[in-house]
Length: 330
Image (cartoon, rainbow, N blue to C red):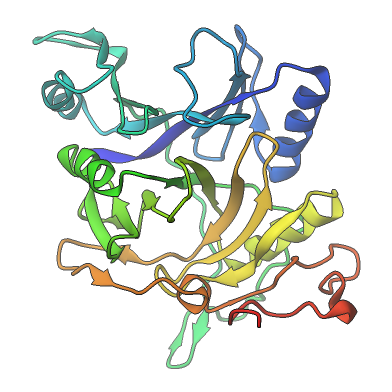
């Protein structure tokens, strides 16, 4: 069984200024830097999920699916050797198939299988590198369901992400991309018919591990990668810290109605966007995928355009007409 994202790999411009920006960015984001090995710089979340960054011309990388810095590979954690062997059988005829450390009788600790998805993005499957961590968000006191007693909610000075939550890709071949993930065991959670599909890597899992979004006239590429934090308070604390550090908000904080999750998006020097994410729906095989018509209030029940300034705790440029992104602007 596939358990979730274990590692994402970016390719960036090989310049001192770009490497300095990336190192500073992921440190501010709350990841732990690991020793540099080979040509890769690696950071990890609390549970050991990894962000790997290489030079975009590194021969170890497959060709990029779009120009500039961007996502170059996604590694998925697999629960056990039997699941990895099953994936080996399912994937052997797929484009770009590669296998390492597997045969019919044994699976090495560093074994993996991989192939290229319909966009040409390498998808790697290996025994999970993540570790169990005793991390819990703060209970909420919903009316009629009091969970937090004699305990104040926390205020986070910054975020320390627990996990990599999901990847969102722009696609120009939605059906082929959905079929690819479905063949590997992913399940559709919700849909924008003809425009997008949210998919989770197992019947019982968080709302989505990958979201495929087809926008007319938009070429394939990376939209964003989401990092899971403990709770809504850490979304705010992490976002305010990133703002104080000078990083640019794309949108947020806010809340997605489709997955129920709270979010805050920032521009990422490695390409695309990056998201703090908390409190998404957890689904089982009993869930029936819903269909939605795309629109601003479907994407965000509420969201602050331009973010919140980390020093004033107010929306930047609010006097100039900024507001909440809940309806289309005239």
